[in-house]
Length: 223
Image 1 (tube, rainbow, N blue to C red):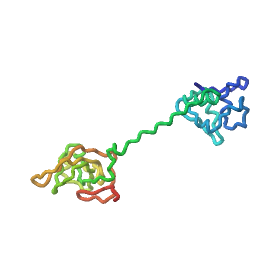
Image 2 (image 1 turned 180 degrees about the horizontal axis):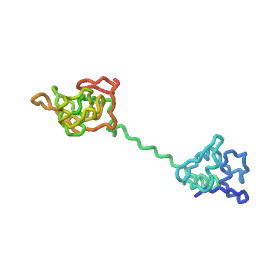
Image 3 (image 1 turned 90 degrees about the horizontal axis):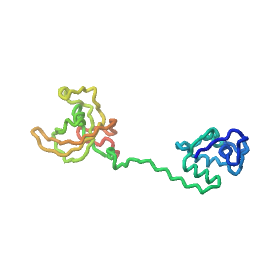
Image 4 (image 1 turned 30 degrees about the horizontal axis):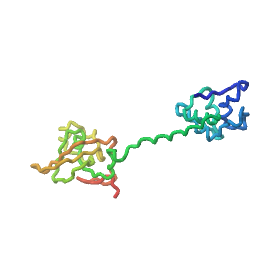
């Protein structure tokens, strides 16, 4: 169904209600059938086939919206049929709410409560790339969960960058850059080896709210 404006007053008939029914100011015109004047609040609910609403002015709908031929939605067609004395208009279906990602489905759902492990560059970058799967520490850990990775401001020795073929200026420092899962811990010759898996890089590094610590700290937890 389409709404067609009749520009020539001589061509108006009782059925040519579209132009007369939609008026910004009903007193500014003489409708062919006054009983078919659509109240502005009803016009505001009209939707064209593309989903657009009619343009509105301070005193009501803008008549320019209805010039020419415009296809209308099925719901609006039913409304017009009711206004013309036809079958009762079908109730429009309520809009489907947008799908919102559940916090339980988000990889960052607990990021504000997660603890962070401080790691120097370039080691933290190698962890995120998946090439470094063991973190060497002087103390053991019983933690077996995903933890955040904080890139320390202090850098590793220059030979570490040479071995990794990375430049210090190209790496983020002083921010949480991702996360990793600690899956195990075992004794080694010089200390302990922490096994790491499933590294995930943050799309945007996050500056911690709390003061970073040498090993563990909670960068974002308020309590």
